[in-house]
Amino acid sequence: MAQLSRRHVLALGVGGALSVASRRGAAASEGPAEVHGISAFGDLKYPADFHHFDYVNLDAPKGGAFSLIPSVRAYNQSYFTFNSLNAFVLKGEGAQGMDLTFVSLMARAGDEPDAMYGFAAKSVQISPDKLSYRYTVRPEAKFHDGTKLTAHDVAFSINALKEKGHPLIQLQMRDVKGAEALDDATVVVTFAEKRARDVPLYVAGLPIFSKAYYATRSFEETTTDTPLGSGPYKVGKFEINRFIEFERVKDWWGADLPVCRGSNNFDVIRYEFYRDRDVAFEGFTGKNYLYREEFTSRIWATRYDFPAIKDGRVKREEVPDQTPSGGQGWFLNTRRDKFKDAKVREAINYAFDFEWTNKTIMYGAYARTRSPFQNSNLVAEGLPSPEELKLLEPFRGQVPDEVFGEPFVPPVSDGSGQDRALLRKAQQLLQEAQLPIKDGKRFLPNGEVFKIEFLTDEASFQPHHASFLKNLNMLGIDANLRLIDAVQYRTRVEAFDFDVAINRLTMSATPGDSLRTYFTSQAAATKGSYNLAGASSPALDALVEKAMAAETRNELTIACRALDRVFRAGRYWVPQWYNKTHRLAYWDQFDHPANLPRYAISDYASGVGERTLWWYDRAKAAKLEQAKSQ
Image (cartoon, rainbow, N blue to C red; front, side, top):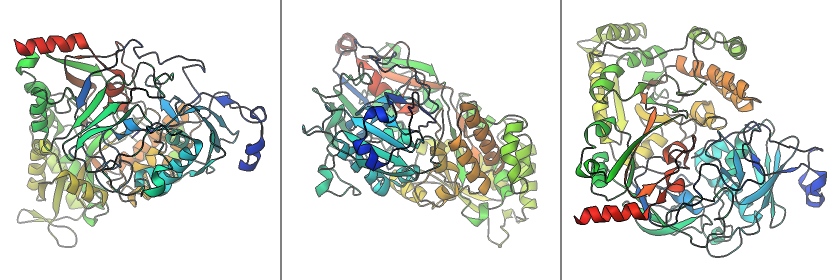
């Protein structure tokens, strides 16, 4: 779920690269210096002796329950259901919240773009060539059954995830050679030359499993047995497809670590699962769960008028989102012949009237997405800079000429829902692509009728398709929407068995190896990857490598802007929209830090949000109960 990065680390130390053999006998003073944290470009806010993160409340009380519905998913998880407690493999529908039950080598800071500090590991030594990371595991770390968490467990976990984890994990660990435990306290992770800049941080954030536990169990299979964890929570009650609870470990070994003080405050965290968003909203109004981040503008604008809102029992907040929003849109499966021609893909873009959709269906709440790096300084604007041109010139003649000019911007309509000028442009592009129209039907070059099936598992998205499909049908395209259940949807999308599907490209503030999962030829050929469009070109592959190899933030910015130009020129998607705020609603029995950290406002944004930083307010809860009885 996390997307992390790095270049060089503060205080990297001196000396030659250490082989595994020499490391066994070398004194620490002979090798690289120990550091307490790592980041993409060496910048760390917190010193080695920091006591806690600035944004937490050290006086936050422990107790109470926090309940929510899923708002973010990773690997094999679904928003709507679950049937397995194994959330890091391809099989099954993994339960939300399983990350709460495990620790990682390092934990990220919510007020820095990508910095990580010691968690299960108290320190790390990094070789001068940056190809080996030697972690020292904390002696107090232990699993929930009381057994010691050792370097052997760390090495097992990294190697198992690399070999047997979800395909997305395997893809992001391509540059990991492996991990080896030198003794109970020391594990060395080695990386391939020219590795992606952020791979070490990705590895540092992976869950640590018990080697002994999996000695008699399959790592790859779905299971309803609770895996042995070591995190601040353990699995409590659950009912497949309906809910799962996580109980705070009262004597947890890591509670007083600098990265944990003031966090993990709830006694119980519970996820509720609904098959329908409207039904889920009704569940919130009925207090079946207590916290909701609202993603549907229609509901936010029209349905937050129920009694508990009016009398103050439910609070609403809009918190500015200062993080990259990424890119959400309809992705056109270019693995299918009918979408091979970029002119066809561009014509489909002209059929979507965002202005009408935003005004009529979404209450003007959204801005138009134009880039997968939306809401960041990585978005390409205007003509390419000289630095961008230097990266793009080798591909002149291989990429559209547009790449060397102004980047593609989605068309702006007259807001009528059927902008005739835009539809004429679409008609012209289809004719140029040799897709004739006869008796009102559009035909492909092979003589077949041009049909497009839009696939979704969310009924709430149906209104957003209506005008789009109507315009496509006016162009002679037989376009329809198919709504299927969440399990079938994930199976089909992971197998690339679709024409058009919605995806969100989630970007970190410092994108790195995760770019491979969205833009590369390897990802296009890897089932389960996020490259739904099948975008595949030498230019994209090369620019992803440039971005991952960037040695400064400026170099990263230049590479991502060049990548943005090539991707947008490919017309691989129909960009949708994004929200500049987090819309939060919750029953008024919680509190949170006054200054929520920029990169951890909500779990949707970072995976480090409300579950971790908020707390239960007994006085507020008592008032709620009193109001209920009146």
